[in-house]
Structures are given as structure tokens and as C-alpha cells.
Image 1 (cartoon, rainbow, N blue to C red):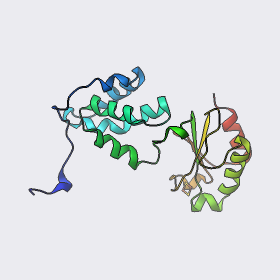
Image 2 (image 1 turned 180 degrees about the vertical axis):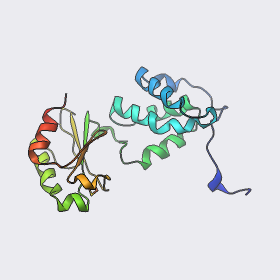
Image 3 (image 1 turned 45 degrees about the vertical axis):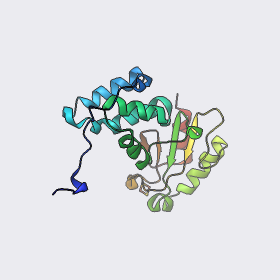
Image 4 (image 1 turned 30 degrees about the horizontal axis):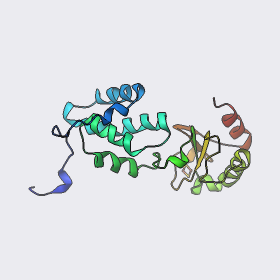
Length: 182
Ligand code: FES
């Protein structure tokens, strides 16, 4: 139907001028981008945005505007198409102040709360010497405030460390996981 915005797709915009912003991308980020691009039709380059942002998170631990612009230019899509994805998903951080090598999300939603997530959270706060929402001074850990169920209720209580899920947590298991990180 003419004028129906719900059916519109953002296609690569060939007239977007190259300004060299994409040069900011690291070799790892470019390799990841190419890996994801290979999975989609040539006219659906925007489909690689999620994979690209994951790669930037891996490198920088947050998403800066210059890096999001670099992704947009590399894909040939408007920057806003990257910003809207970056700001929609809670797994992405936009604030440099919280950037840390490891982002820890303890689920405190109903199932996890009933099975002791508050104690797990308190244990981690004590262990790292920070409060929920803070980053350790050495930028090794960020204790993220998680608002939603992380979809692993059958393994409650659970936490996510970067992309990895850890379930059936006890304070001892948390120590083992955090102490075992590189
Ligand atoms: S309530 Fe914690 S994973 Fe669902």
C-alpha cells in the first residue's frame, strides 16, 4: 500500500558519501562485518548491524558515536539505522564511563529473585567493591543493572558475563567464574 511505512525496509544508500569514517574499524571488526555480510543478500547489508555492534562491543566495551558512524558508512546505511539498533538492545552500552572488559548482568527478575539472586548480587558487590551500575576503577568489571528476565529461568539464579550465561549460581560458583577470567 502506498505510504504504508510499516512495510519499508532500509536499503543500502549508494549515494551516502564515503568520508573515511569506516577507517576507524579495526581488523577484527571488519572481519566480523564481512562474516555477517556473507550471510545476507547484497541488498540487505543492514542485517549485519547487530553482528557489527557486537564486534565493536568486543573491542571497545561500549559503542561510541564515531564507531557507530563507521559501521554505518561501511554498510552504506544511514547512521540513524545503527543508532536505533544500538539504543534498543540492553546488551549494548552507549556510555564510555561504564566501559569495562567484563560486563556482569545478574538477573533479578522473579524466578531468579525467588532463588536467591539478591544474595548473589550482594556477594558480587562485596567481592568487587562496587555497587550495581558501577565499574571497577581498573575497568575490569562493570556490574550492569539488568531490568529484564534474561531468559534462562530454568537455571536460576543466573548471570551473564559478556555473552556467556552462567546458571545455578552459588557464591562459590560466582567466585570460581570471576576468578577464572583472564
Ligand atoms: S527470571 Fe532470571 S532468567 Fe528469567
